[in-house]
Length: 115
Length: 273
Image (cartoon, rainbow over all chains, first blue to last red; front, top):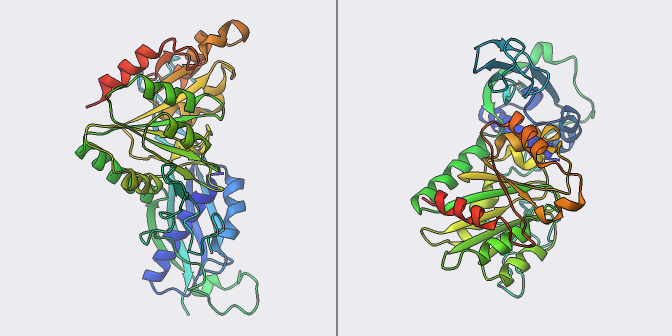
């Protein structure tokens, strides 16, 4: 379950930002998760509470925003939304897409409270 | 106290073991350089024990971060890569399911590279069984026990390599934790990622675990000596894997009989910068 170490990294990034900004508590952490990022939402949510326990993150909500998979066919340049990474191009049938979005794993923002 | 080795320090969660040292000390486990935050130092008053769901409309402040979650690992991986380049070390990250024959492939690789300085990093959740085998085969090896972790990361490799202190122009073989899912996301700084697949597995593995096959450069199809006894269709497997990764290369071999090993050794020699 690599989601636990992913969540720990999210927690570290959030805590460092909160401390650098003198925040007293973090109320939510917003994370963009690509459809093909290779992580399971449920597993991240499961790990979240444990990762924040005893820190400024205690009680903070983890807001996961899914970024859909968008690819461009390298053969005919058509942009489309495949269900899976390796779906053939609906226009020409080629399977060699360039990924435009859907691999994101990014901490976008945190919402904090000041004492 | 570290709950993985019980040695009293603030744990990184994993331990490095050198089988060449008989007492199996965990001397590198708790290096001062680790950067984890300790969860107790920022404790705050919180008498209600509930989320303050109504407050953030009034007191909430949004701070933009826009940082890649894997940035820390990726930065460390880039440092490892620079170290390998500076020392002209070829570093390979070997990934696979448990039981595909990674360690046996490594043993035979060592035997087929006489005169080449080879170092090995072994990743497993527990035990030094694999490192003991590599040590017996004559290569300097560090075992990383990840405890509950399911993959190696760039920080572990950085520490293991500092301990191994490899010579210039050498080969570093990193045997990742047997797992087709988690290691895919973690760049270790290797030049090439090699996925090992055995013919006792299903041909549809690449479709089921696309991230791993997508991130690999070479696929070793192992245990070819068993092909007459299993239903594995090599063509079908290659077709599926190429669907995920059109530039993936394939080599077929048997670590049991040594068949096909010549091409693998040749591949390594070609890649050694």
